[in-house]
Image (cartoon, rainbow, N blue to C red; front, side):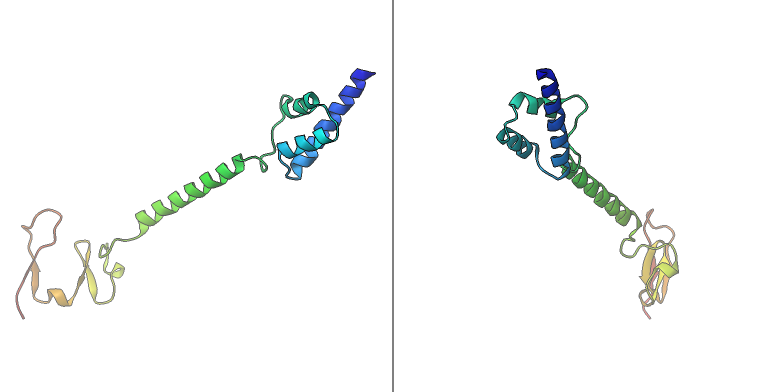
Length: 136
């Protein structure tokens, strides 16, 4: 009869643990309540440590780590997208990418007024836009 009573008590303890974990109580709070009600510590410990039993995910501290990691990953992706798609100041690939009064010349937005009597010089260093300008 004692084994049957112990098995029933273990089942009740497991059910109690499940119910109060689902309500958001910590394992320490649950253990304290069970001890106060007279349940022996070995039975409580067994209820917490049976194979296959885990602390509820939303109650554990793992969810905080998961949430922070997901937020950091999201911010990193947004930063990469902004850095790759935000045009640098003055860079262009067509005149429509430049503000009014500017045109795209060799990948840079250049004011129309700045180059009124200017010609492109081809023998300039690689990657540079060189102009020879005459005074008006």
